[in-house]
Structures are given as structure tokens and as C-alpha cells.
Length: 144
Image (cartoon, rainbow, N blue to C red; front, side, top):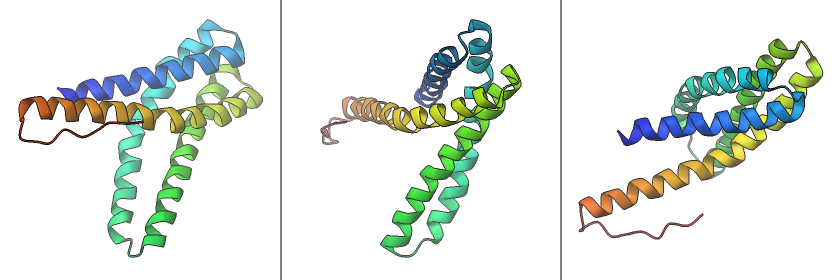
């Protein structure tokens, strides 16, 4: 149940980011609504595939430097994935490569910065629920 609530929260966070950026760029509630419906759903569906591919790569990483470079490359590829989807949706919605380009630059950066904070909040919530269920688990300090 918690996993489903977290996933729904991720979709709603994506939707909020997509709407604000699309409305700022286009000034149109219709195009913004299209972005809200299509773009975040595509990202949330593709992100587990992206994470699974990188998890396979991490299992093969040997040294600390290789692991660190892999983490950086993973974030860059995640940003590229978000950018490609944002560009495609905005280009199809507006017919403008410029609008698609603006969305492709701004939307993934916002998602890559905001979603880890979202996940940390959910992790803290899950830890606090586990601590309440099992008082033998030491409570950890949660900080952003």
C-alpha cells in the first residue's frame, strides 16, 4: 500500500512540475493539461526500466571511482530521458521545436532536483512507520 501511495505521489509531483513549466512556456491551460496527462506518466513508466538497467551496471562496478562515475552518468542519463520525453510531448503539443527545447531544458532539471527530495520524504515516512510497528528498531534522525 505504501509503495502504491509513493508511486501516486511521484506521478502527482511530476504532474505539478509539468503543468507549471508548460503553462509558463505556452500560457495555455490546454497544452499544459496535455503535458500534465502525458509527460509525467511516460516518465514514471520509463524510470523503473532506466533504474533497472543502471542497477545491472552497478553490480558490475568494481572500484570506488568507477561507482562514483557511474552514479554521475546515471543522473545525466536520467536527465536525458526526462529531456527527451519533455521535448517530444511539447513538440507534439505545440509544433514548435523552441517550446520543446525550453521544456526539455527546464523540466528534467526540476525533476532531477525535486524528486530526490520527494523520495527522501517518503523514506523518512516509511522509517517512522517501521519504528512505530517495531519499537526495537532504533529511530534514525531524518534530515534533508
